[in-house]
Structure formats: structure tokens, C-alpha cells
Image (tube, rainbow, N blue to C red; front, side, top):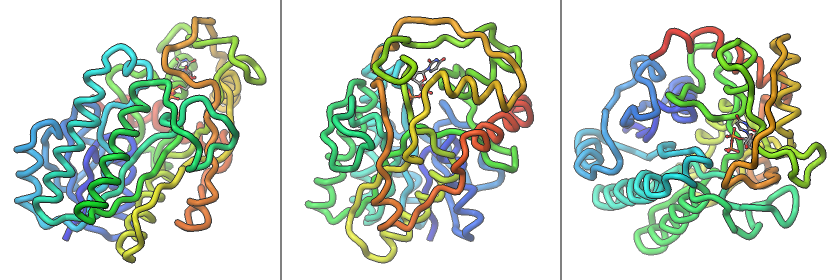
Length: 327
Ligand code: UDP
């Protein structure tokens, strides 16, 4: 029996595939390669398919004996979700519905879902625990709520068990330097700042300078992608031990502003990063910092990368190394 990693050629997915290999688990990767890369999964069994095409999903479940599913697929850009909302509902919500109905049809009843801290919206309290009210300020965040609600009903009606991991800002790359974050059109802060440091971009746009934060820029909780991958493995073990469906925040519990990220990338790279102040980006909450006590105490998860510079070093190693030879 294998673990099906949906979106396994993407950023979080490929790190989860690697962690599963290291744990000696059998893996099958399902990905449409819209954002993912074939190189990211080395020789893992691969099925190219699209979640929005139910026949693709049914085919992979018919062909393989699947024990559980890690669902890391979907569109992930907050800014884009405010410009092309339909794409987000189609990929993230309809696509996931195809996955859930196929799981139900084929008797696969364990799912780990990569959700997001973006579903909380502007926090009423910091850190944000799992019970915090959900009031997303982006379509992206809302698509995660839609899926979480579907999961609750599929559990109540069919007994489909899930662990939802509300991941805050995934950052860094595998310390091997072999895999990392690479999007056709990159908009995430750390890779963009590194591009500027490497001379690939003239300046970094700073989206918003008047947020109610210590330096006026947005504050996020950056957590290493390998720690996120590790949380996925621990969540699989949780369900394998017949524990109930659960929801966990995954972050470091520490807030870093956009300006502080820029300073850290300058420090680690030794290069100056030019900034250009721009208006706020639609869909951005001012502050998102995870409360992770539940993941630590119940799931037994603890981030290994606690130092921001160490996280950025792995991203820099990846972007200045193997990433350059990928398509
Ligand atoms: N950001 C920025 N300039 C960029 C990219 C991002 O100022 O070129 C800001 C963005 O507005 C947000 C934070 O950096 O406040 C993190 O954005 P990112 O897209 O990396 O992750 P998100 O929090 O949207 O998932």
C-alpha cells in the first residue's frame, strides 16, 4: 500500500515525498505539473493528472493500492486569488471535491490536507490558535475554509478521517540543495528578495508601508518547508493510530516583518537589496503568527529550523544552485 501525494511535484509536496522516502514509505505522486516539476520527485512513481478532471483522479485510485492521501495541491497565491478567484475555487475546491468523492468511492479514508493560516484573516489575538475565528481577507483563504468544511462533513457522513495542517508561510529548501521552491512566475517574498540579491531583479516591491506593525510592513510566520513535511508524516502516523480527525497550526510561532526578511536576506547573501514602496497588495492580512501548542503537544511536532538565517541559507543555496538548471 502506498501514500498518494497529490501535488507531490510542488514545493511542499516534493519535500513531503522526500520525507516519506526517508521514512521508508511507498509513495505515488499525482501532479498536473502546472506549478510542480518532474525533477522534484526524482524516481518516485509518477502519475500526471489534474484534480479538476475526475477521470484522472479515478484512474490513479483504480491503478494503485492507496493507503492514505497527502493533499498538497492547489493554487497558493494570495494576490492572484484576488484577481482570478474562479481559478482558485476550481482548483482548490472543485478539485478537492473530486478527490474526496473518489476516496469515498474506493474506500480510502485517510487524508492529510495542507491548509493555510490565511483562512484566519486579521487576527483578534496573537498568536492565532486553532479556535480563532475565521474571517479570511482573500479568496485563497476562503478556498481553504471550503475544503475544511467539506472534510468535516465527509467525516461525519462517511467516516473519512483527516488531519488539517494550517501551514503558515512555507520557506527555505531541503538542506541537500536538490529541491526547493520554484514557480514559473514567482511572487513569494523570500525567493523574490533572493532574486534581487542575485541581480535577477532590480528591486523588491514592498507591498504596504502603513500596516499597524512595528515597521509598517506585514508580519508573517515563516516556517521551514522540511518542518512542514515532517508535520505531514506525523499527521499520517496520527491517523494510522486510529486517532480522530484533527486540525493543527504549523508555524514557528514567531513573527517576522517584510523589512526584517529583507535585512536577513541581505545579511545571509552579503548583497544589498533595493526596495521600492508600493501600495498594499489586495488580500494581505497585517499580521499572521501561529499558535502551535496543539501540534507540539498532541502531534509531537517541533520545528528543527528555528533560526531565520538558517532557513534563508537553505533557500539561497537552492536558488543559487540546482534551481538554475531546472525548467
Ligand atoms: N511581499 C512583498 N513584496 C514581494 C512579495 C511579497 O512586500 O515582492 C509581502 C506580501 O505583501 C506579504 C508578505 O510579503 O505581506 C509575504 O508574502 P508572500 O507572497 O511571500 O506570502 P503570503 O503571506 O502571501 O502567503
